Length: 377
Image (cartoon, rainbow, N blue to C red; front, side, top):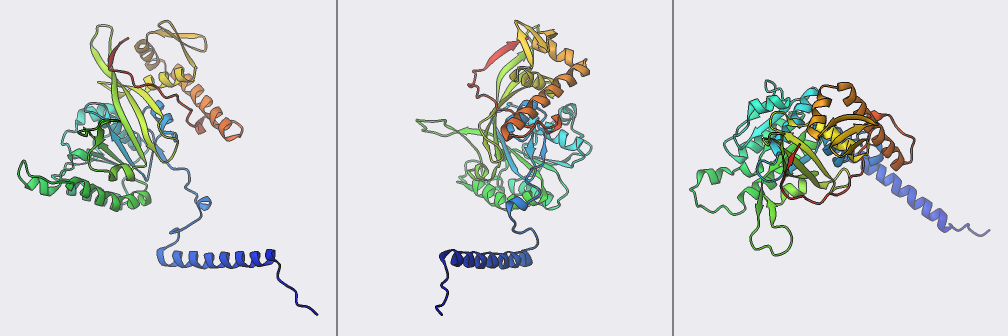
């Protein structure tokens, strides 16, 4: 009797079985040596949905694509002076504290204003603050806080102020080529993995500089070398684009525009605008008005604003004042916004509409960067 030959299909199946068996042995060995969860299939991971902290501006939460800043990631916020970087960070801290989280602020610039932070909503009695003398001390403090697994958000303000100890000990005029960049690169290599494990939201603010001799493209760059750009999951460019004035012509705030120039968790290059008022920080109601208008829920005819054929007020600042005193109308608009966002999420995923609480970000059109101007309400 002739021997039965193995068919190509049977041979392929036996090879596949052997590969699967070897992979199982390898995975078991890795887990035994490095601990359970050291390696896993992405689909088996129950933490695919990244927990987030709201920025305090609904328009920015939507532009980020995940309704806030992610925990367990490194985030960079950069822009010119007085553009709202620290204000935005303070709002994120306030929202983290409201959720019962622990926050730390590394004030490398030695310029924090407790009174302003309190007006924004930060619980300054429970806010951990450090004012280190040099960059190495600041980054070591950050590393220790992250390793504690007890801090929910850390803000470092700013990278430009993280001066290496050798530069502080040296003389003015001494050259320290690439010293800060090497310090930042080494620190970020250490803290990136720890940030992910501890689920700490780590925010760095940064200043911008101009490169000399750039003929094409933007000459602007950020301080601290390229490591910050690589290790950040989200990078946001914030600019002041307008001055907000009251009826008497006095400046009462500024209009800020944020572009998400890098985003590893959602599509990047979305933009958001919101009001920063001198006495309250980011205007929550102003952001609701912006999103309502973007979605077509709030209509503007001339200078009058209306919602569902019901007139609100004349002038944007008047609408903000009206909604501050009419919380029922504010909640109606906010509920409608969440419902529309939920419908868009369901339409994009092909599922039936979810509850408003599961609202997802809506697509936003790219706006051309407007020149500085004044807005009179």
